[in-house]
Structures are given as structure tokens and as C-alpha cells.
Length: 375
Image 1 (cartoon, rainbow, N blue to C red):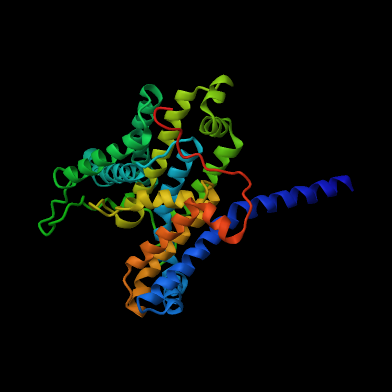
Image 2 (image 1 turned 120 degrees about the vertical axis):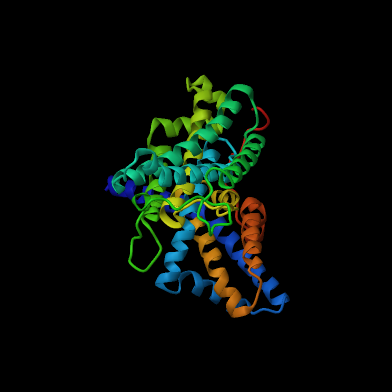
């Protein structure tokens, strides 16, 4: 009897924690949709028609669901990258550059490795090599920032922004130079197509959604498991909450900072790798513009929880994928989708506004984004 009561009490606590975690983001989305509808009405559109077009374009058919999953895949990886940084008290704004680095090196392994070796590789070897190489290079790129943070106090926000410039301009140099597709008909900055043996196959015939989407869901679970069930995850969360207390408890804070940034960069690099090997089959300049910055909004909306990140990634993917259908049905500008995303982020980041509007009491939770300059 006592055991049954304890189980019921534990279940109630779990449900309450889920409600606490999801209520404010849900109300933030609802509020943004309502305000977005008012704006659509003000510019002469029909809000119900616009939102129905958005839903139809993102979820209304097998093809629409497939394309939404394709959009969600890099969003999940990049969102997890930023969320992991948040858990460690680090604000990784460098996902954009880390993603680009992962993509370009994954493409390099994809098209050049068979040429270097002089023979074709089996897919079971070539695909993991291409993906892992891009992932590791993204981790190395972010690890530099982690080392600067740990040993010099250099702020990760400034350093990741600067590393973005270096990564994106270096990528541009490579794609316009030694890595440019030499085909006579090619006039844009892109690599040659990767080999067939380096391409992740689609899950279903006739649809573009590929196994990278399944990998994204598995990685989300893995990140949750690492953060909540392992010593490493405990160290990351402890350093993120209070590095002084972590140091006093015997945790190597410098190592944890570097490792957290490296793991974050690996996730962002994985986003670029999967886009190359699973969808585009080459790296093209500018294909990923905005993914890294959208990832910040996704991590915030998901409250830095892996499950929340997955759900937020689907929301952003659905909005992006459904925007074209919405524009076709209503003749409204597709920029309204960016407006909706901005409103959602505004209300999630400034959750005190949502709590005030809906009279929700604060339970004192907060997201630790960064510990200050050189902290």
C-alpha cells in the first residue's frame, strides 16, 4: 500500500515537472501565433487561411512530412549543440561556423578519399568516415574556443563569433578555390558531388527523408542520457551551475569547459556532415546560412532539454517548410515566418511577460546562459 502511494506521488511529481517545463513555452507559442494573426489581418491577409496553409504545407501529406523531417534534422543537431553549451554554462554562438567546417570536411572525405586511395570504398566504411570526420572537425573548431575560455578567460561569445567569420570565409576560399567543382558547366562555389558510397540512403522510396533523421533522434536520446545518467554529464551540469563549487568538489573545471565546447561543436559539425552526406551530396556555399543562429532560438524554446530541443526543431522546421504553401495560398510574404519565430523567441526569452499575462507563478527556475566576462 505504501509502495503504491509512493508510486502515485512520484508519478504526480513527474507530471508536474513536465507541466512546469512545457507550460510557458506552449503559452509563448500560442501568444506569438495570436499576435502574428493580428499582424496578418492588419496587412490584409486571412490569419486562418494563412495558418491552414502553413499546416498543410508542413504536415498535410507524406511529402510534406518528409520535407519537414529534412528541415528538422540539422535543427535538432544544431539545437542540441547550443543546448549542451547552455548546460555547461557556455553560450556557443559558433554553431554556424562549426556546422560549415563539418560540412566542408565531410564533403572532402566524400569525394576525395576514393581518389586519394585509388579505389572505391564500401558504403559501410565510407559513410561513417565522412560523417565522423566532419563531426570531429566541428568539435576541434569549438574546442579551440573552449581552450581559450579555460586558460585565458576569453569570453566564448566573442570568440565563437570571431571563429564564425574565420570558418565561413575560409570555407568560401576553399569552395572558390581548390575544392571547387571543376565541371565546365559549374559557375558557383561548391564542391564536386560526393561518391555514391558516401551517401546516406533515404528511408522511403520516393521521399527525401533519410536515415540521418533517425540518427538525430538517437543522438538526442544519447545527449539526454549523457547529461543525466553519467559522471561526465554531472560534471558538465555542475560546472554550468557553479564552477567554484565544482572546483571545490574536485571537478577539473578547465577540462570540463574544453570538453563541453568540443562536444557542442561535434554536434554542430554533425549537422553539417549529415546535410552533405544525406541530402545535398556536396557542400555549397551558403546552404546552411541561419541554421546555427536558429539553433539558439531552438535551444531556448526547448529549455535546453533534449526532448524540448527535438520538439522545438520540429516547430521551426514545420514553419520553414510550410511557408511556401502559405505564401502560395495567401500571397503573404514568406518573411512572416521569421516574424513568428522572432515573436516566439521573444516570449520564451522574456517569460516574465507570459507569466504576467496568464498569471502563472514563477518557481524560480532560470537558464544559465553564460557566466560573464572571463568568469
